Amino acid sequence: MDLILWRHADAEDGVDDMARRLTEIGRRQAKQVGKWLDDTLPGDTRIIVSPAMRAQETARGLGRAYATLEELAPGADAVDVMLASGWPEAKGAVLVVGHQPTLGRLASMLLFGVEQDFTMKKGALLWLTNRVRRDERQVVLKAALSPGLLP
Image (cartoon, rainbow, N blue to C red; front, side, top):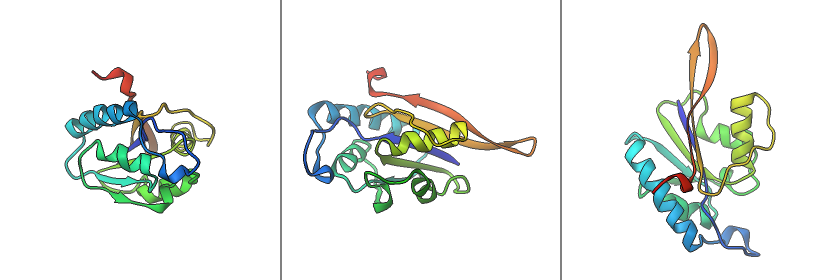
């Protein structure tokens, strides 16, 4: 299974956390990373997105159909996001568009075996996969990308 964790792009400040929209910079980030993802992701990738407006707008930068899951809302637990994605048993690729600190904590848990703070920049993504080698399950980092690295 491939698990791609994409943090929402740069967003406005606001009192209503769920209604915060992307800034102009955030819209550019979502388009940049979205284009890279569209060129790279398998066509049958399952895409699941937080209901927060900034995550919804980030996902739209990809231009593919997606499902909105309440389990991915701001403040979600890393284990709940992992379960929603189907890690590690799901087949194919799953893209999760969500929030910090949840995505960073999930990445830390999968990569290092301990849930701890692990910062992901706004608009950045981590692409993880799993495999079995010599009867041992391994998590492999396939890609790490932030919008500043793209043209």
